[in-house]
Amino acid sequence: MPAEALGQYIRELVQADAAITAALAPMLAAYDTKGKHLADGQKKLRTWLVHTARVTRGQAAQYEAVQSGELGGGSSGVGAAGALPGVVS
Image 1 (cartoon, rainbow, N blue to C red):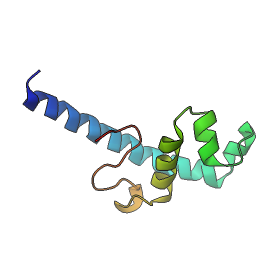
Image 2: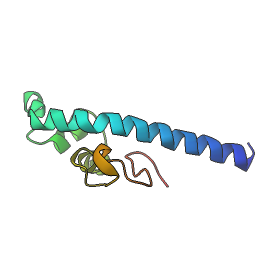
Image 3: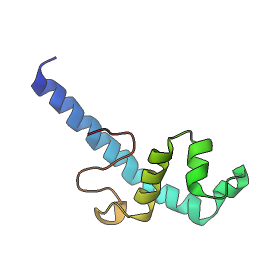
Image 4: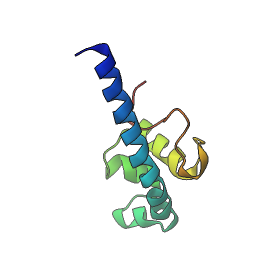
C-alpha cells in the first residue's frame, strides 16, 4: 500500500476514534455519576472498565481522563491531538 494511502487511512481511523470517544465521554460521566458500576460489584468506574468492559488499566485511566475532561479539548474531553485509548502514535 502506498504511504500516502496508508497515511490517509490512519488519519480517518483517528478521526473516527475521536468521534466515538467524544460520544462516549458523557455516557461514561453519567454512568459514573449515577454509580451504575456498583450494580456490577465494582466500586470504581476504572475497575468496572477493566473487569467488565475488558480494557487495559491504561485504557481505563484514559477513559476516566476523557470522561472528566482532563485531556483538554473542550467539553468533549478529546484532546487536540486525539489522545485516545487504543490509539498508538
